[in-house]
Image (tube, rainbow, N blue to C red; front, side, top):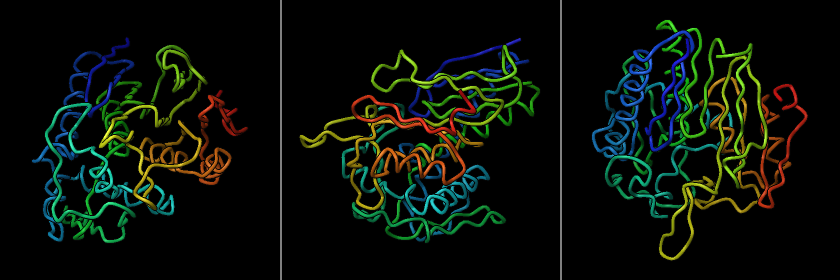
Amino acid sequence: MTAERRLRIMGSDAHLLVVGGDERLLDSAEQRLQDLEHKWSRFLPRSEVSRLNAQPGKELAVSDDTVLLFSAAVEANRLTLGLFDPTVLASLLAKGYTANRYGTGGECRIAGQPAAGTAPGCHGIDIDPAGNTVRMPVGTAFDAGGIGKGLAADIVTEELVQAGASGALVNLGGDLRLRGQAPETDSWVVDIEDPFAPELAIATVRMVEGAIASSSTLIRNWVHRGAAEHHLIDPRTGDGPTNDVVAASVVAGAGWMAEAFCKVAMLASTPAGALKLIEDAGLTGLVVKVDGTVEVPSSLGAFL
């Protein structure tokens, strides 16, 4: 038996699917995603992330989920040598991304008016898993962004399998996690969308288990003070990338890892450099150039 649901959550179109489960499992998955959004969204003033951003320098008690989020983000920052950075929020706000254009919530506000530009980085974030506390340094603001969706997909698929599903899929706006039995064959079959024509696929990936994250500068766009802007920020400059990569997809063992390296691929100076960064991490994926050309490394062949 297979059950699935499509909904809007975390500012994204979501797809939930369980194998060997029913609507009750989907209800619990939807409620869990709402719970995580209420803890992690920078657009909800009572979220744990918003409270931390509002009180820099102060150690605050948070949930296990938020300790896990900050731990994953700091680890991703370390693994990517700082190219993935959740502390670019000041630059996002300076570019006009102050309100949630894609979901619920109000105006995002942070304390102390951290300066846009080079991101402060994660080195000053203090996480105490034993005491369930996090402290943000003064001058730093955190945005869960894509890694939050990747981690949420990791958490919810794991909980669905623990609750009795023989297989589970959670896709949050292109951050997709797969676990256990696929619905029809021995492997999960996932189409990677063409960023120029989302109704078409540029690749079809087959996986027994794992994660895929996709990102593009062709979505989440807006105009601020006469300039075209998008959500992708280079932490080294506080501005958008200047390469000719318009989209990337990364295959990894976990959603948070796929999301982190997907952002790294988008920031590489060239498509070849993007693929090297992905493969040097022991992962694989693909990149799409501004002219529509798709660059696919040989390592992805094991999944095609």
